[in-house]
Length: 311
Image 1 (cartoon, rainbow, N blue to C red):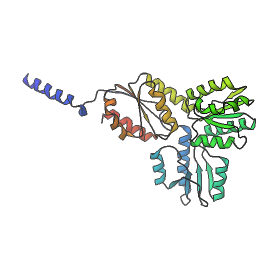
Image 2: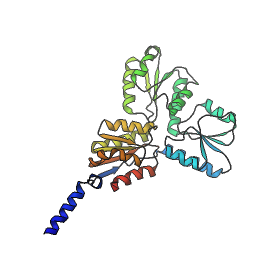
Image 3: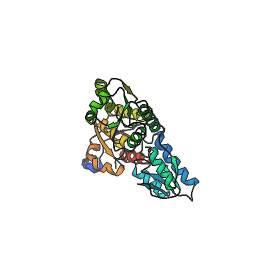
Image 4: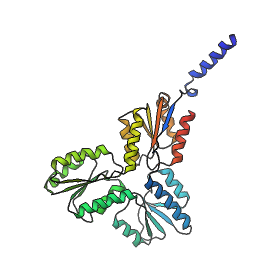
């Protein structure tokens, strides 16, 4: 009897040590977390290019995807990232999944590189839709962040055919163009593939009130929409959502923004950052994990394993 009491006291002391005691967790990983089709295609193709051309320089203009772990891996394989096009060069220069303008592609050729276009097929569709609207004399509104490389390329392609092209991520950013929009016969809308549907809806509502004729092309990619829908459903039954992916990734940051309105949410780039949120994790019973379209599977798995082990 005395032995049982002593044992119970020892166990109790151990349980009181916060670092050694974790409540049992229900941990769920989103089915759609990680690389989307376009990102997977870009990463696999650029690796294949290098493997098939070991004696050639292989460059990517800008980061192939917004993920430092992937960029470091490519560097180790000899695939270099260019921040600008040099006056002269040789080898292969890859157009990343975000796309580029025809002018930039021509500069790549003129510098002496062989361009390989790995623009995501969904991004290509947005570019083509914007071009068609511009050709048909629509006032083109691109819903997205003006500094994002995908949006820069969409705008550059549309501006080859019209100067009536603007970018806006909010109604406030559109208001300076209100008189131009009102005076134009037709207004056409395309959307950055990784944008939030709520952002598009707010802008469409505003444009509906001031446009004579409005054409809307919802070009948010299916993968983005499905990923956001799944994450929102998980968040409804979670005490904590963990979003894994680069802070530079638009679709990842949008995921975190959406989920913060539903439940407690943290956005991390790797498993080491979990240490910054120990209290939140310890106090959560139901934890769900999702990840951006540019987050590698091994990064997601390290986060999942660390949570399951309670480290």
